[in-house]
Structures are given as structure tokens and as C-alpha cells.
Image (cartoon, rainbow, N blue to C red; front, side, top):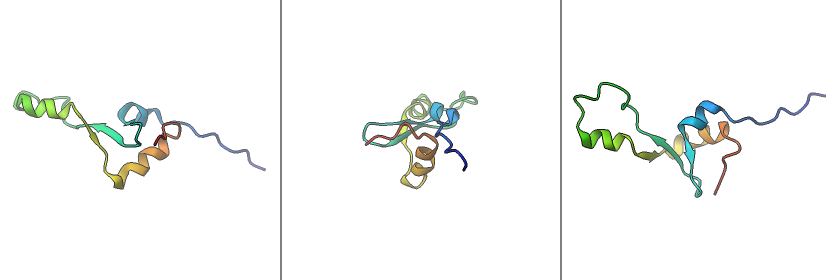
Length: 71
């Protein structure tokens, strides 16, 4: 009989997403790594803030982060 495979956290996802106490999945904005000279300070500031992942994609992230389930 095959052994049960233990659940493991995908470290790539753990570095990119955070799960809040209420269960929301938060992400950072893309597009802040380079080519920033032409972007306004307001735009760059907004990209540095966290945003909630849409409900459509939330379950994909929570599947690969089994020990982060909250809420």
C-alpha cells in the first residue's frame, strides 16, 4: 500500500504571497524591478503596496501553501 505523501509548502509561492488572518491572499504589484525611470513616483509607490488576489485564483495559491490556511 502506498504511503501518504506529506503536504509541503511551495517555497516559491511562500516568498510571493502572504495569507492574512482573515484568509485573504495578498500579492505585490508586478513591474517594479526595472525600467522605472519613466514611471512616476506615485506609480512606483502604488506598485510596492500589497493587493488582494482575486477570488478566482485564490484557491491555486492556498493549495500550494497548505500550512498557511487561516480564517
